[in-house]
Amino acid sequence: MSSVDTAWLRMDRAANRMSIACVLIFDTPLRYDRLRATLAARLLRYARFRMRPVEDATGAWWEEAPRFDLARQVRRARLPGNRGPDALQRFVAQLVPRPFAAQHPWWEFHLIERYGSGSALVARIHHSYADGIALIGVMLALADPAAEPPPAAPAANAGPDPADGESGPLAPLFEALTNAAAGGLTRSGEALGKYADLLPRPAQVIDYARSAASVAAELAQLATMPDDSRTRFKGKAGVKKAVAWTDPLPLDEVRAVGRALGCSVNDVLLAAVAGALRRYLVAKGDPVDGLEVRALVPVNLRSAGERGLGNRFGLVTLLLPIGRANPLECLYELHRRMEALKGSYQPWVAFALLGLAGYCPRALQQAMLDLLANKATAVMTNVPGPQQPLYLAGAKIARLMFWVPQSGDIGMGVSILSYNGGVQFGLIVDAGLVPDPERVIAHFRPEFERLLLAALMEPWDMQRDPSLVERELTAALHPPAAKSRSVARAGAPSEPPADRLA
Image (cartoon, rainbow, N blue to C red):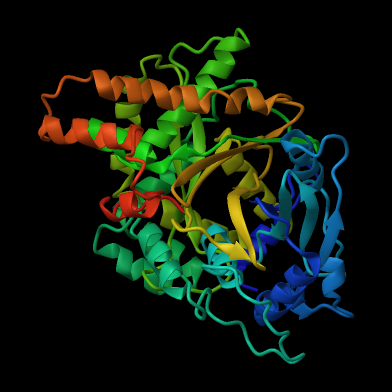
């Protein structure tokens, strides 16, 4: 097991399990037998998913799980009561803090066969197996662009792991998504190539970093960064979690607002998050003037075309200007800060520190990671999903959501995922700190609509052609009925929907 994956394995705590949770909602029923056949043929091609993590004082490694049984990993589940979104959210919140059984692989699927008019599927995978971008590749390997017959089961002696999404009709789509995420915040500076060469040897990365003034400055900044602001979002994490999500925002509208205001899609989405957090605190009567809350933002470090399981991302720290009531002021300040991060070495330094932590004794690793966790209130992840509908085991995926784990005592995870022309917000919180995450989530769309209104009211004295901007906003808000969404997307620029973050 790589040192970075080892670090994620060791981060597990009762209050914060290091598992990534994913929810897929289907408008039509998903058959259990066909789901089992699909996972047997496609997921088990990855040798790692037949293995369990094992650790002792000398390190950690992957070991074939004894008496592996796919039926144990893929189970049927039922929701109590009305079987609506509230019941599904409670089910996910109860599932997230459960520890995995040490003798079995650390992943599981729960099929809720009766959910609305169709089904729901809840997946949970330990972070040591893969990061978000790699798991998008796994999802694409499981899915099809159209309903197809169930695949045949593989031979019992399936070979080594294939590259993520390397086979099947969706392989080019995965490569495009990975390349988009890899074009991220840190792809500047000649020294980055040297870092990439040293990534398999994190200790050498640190040695090299100390000899470079710019990287040394990033290390000093991380070490001297003050603890984050004290708000009701931050405190001692407990075991009980709460989960909520929104209806998707139309991606075309988000793009149009970003273009009109001269900002990226990512800037607009982050501004909506900051505004939603502000509104929640104001409703609780908490002081917000001048308040800033720090978030840890994962950044994909894979090279263009690079595939494979495991964890290949760094972290940047981003201060959310929650204290700014004016939505445009908040947006432009976030834009300025994101631009400043584009030349930062923070992601590479954080990646190297994670790798170094994986080599250290557990107690020392815990102290290093707690130091970083104390400096942040939330983990915010933005993953570019496929912009075409996908089918899993013959059933069309209507909605797709996920949540990332939080390390230490970080009590909030915000996830943003674009899929099939929509942008989905998801929130997971410590229930002892924020017992009503649905009230936070409820503010996301109104905050975006404030930015939309601001874009419509902005004077057209920008460098762009005002008539073109007006036409784009009008088209996004009122698409012609005759045009399909795919046609509308075909005319859009090639800006990656989730922009720079991984």
